[in-house]
Length: 258
Ligand SMILES: C[S@@+](CC[C@H](N)C(=O)[O-])C[C@H]1O[C@@H](n2cnc3c(N)ncnc32)[C@H](O)[C@@H]1O
Image 1 (cartoon, rainbow, N blue to C red):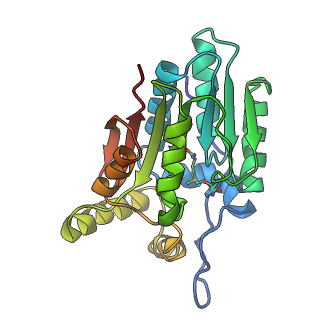
Image 2 (image 1 turned 45 degrees about the vertical axis):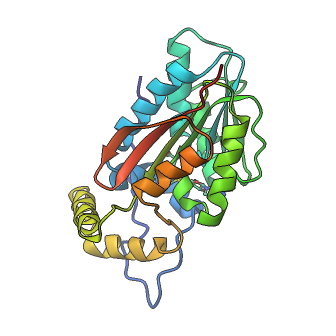
Image 3 (image 1 turned 60 degrees about the vertical axis):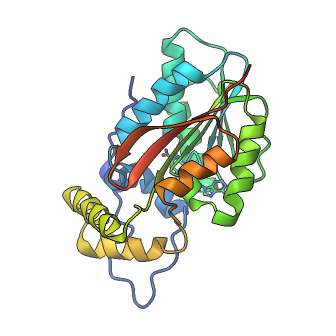
């Protein structure tokens, strides 16, 4: 079951619709962004709803009773809400989902969404903290949906190694990220497709170019090979793709156990 993500007019993303004088400030997940984030995600991330639906399906398969699920960089709690609804549908009542986000505004939105959907508070905890500091206690599933790309590259290996080490056997890490292609011509073509997608969702050329500038050095994409190698080198025995659209890819990384 997909939660109702239809949004009122004041929740429409207009963050970059006015020309900025001088340099565009680096992108932040502040209160303004958190307020319109659901609309921003739907109109900026290709097949956002479908990826969320697939993640909820995977969680149903891989979440192990009596363990914790961590959603690192949970933003407004969409993945947590859908995961909770999906697990409840299976008849499970005793499960534990933990959302982590360093943005207080995002955590407030997430808490509000979970409460509005009447998902019991005992089942979903929201932690306002840096995911690099979060202790991972007994996880069978760790989700990083479009979040790893915001972690400084020099810190990614330590983080993924720690996730691998802490995951239960047969546990999974689910990651979605924007990626670079292996050849610059293909990368350029894929990015053109991506901007066409954004235009078709109502973003103007100004909004697209100002957001691109704001994200420079904030969202740092790896290539498909780099990202896959990162997961394998950190220990994951099975790494596969469960969704891909031009320069966006979602991975499932499995820790095999005896
Ligand atoms: C693109 S959003 C993730 C979207 C969300 N996972 C979803 O599926 O809707 C990235 C999120 O990661 C959070 N974030 C980035 N770096 C973080 C960090 N070091 N610790 C915790 N949260 C972080 C941001 O505040 C933001 O809410």
